[in-house]
Amino acid sequence: MLTVNVAVLLAFIVVMRLRRRTEARSRLDEKMTVVIVLVLGVLIAPTPFGHSLGQMIGQLASSITHASS
Image 1 (cartoon, rainbow, N blue to C red):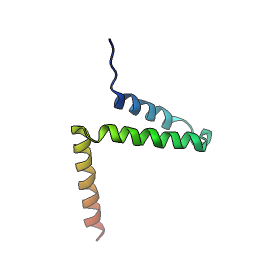
Image 2: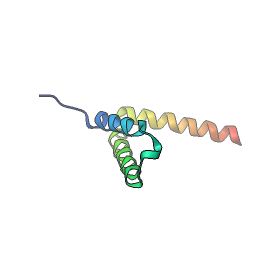
Image 3: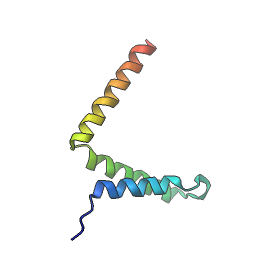
């Protein structure tokens, strides 16, 4: 039996949707992409990869804040 990680599948779908030309997208298509990306974020967040990614983004935001002040 073949099992597919849902987060990997959603990441693949997001990449394929974002590769399309911008002019060809409708508002509904853009909203669907946003929903898929949000679901992907919810699936990745509780994983160790999600925690480390969140820490890296937090450090980046902190360094940008300190650099601009």
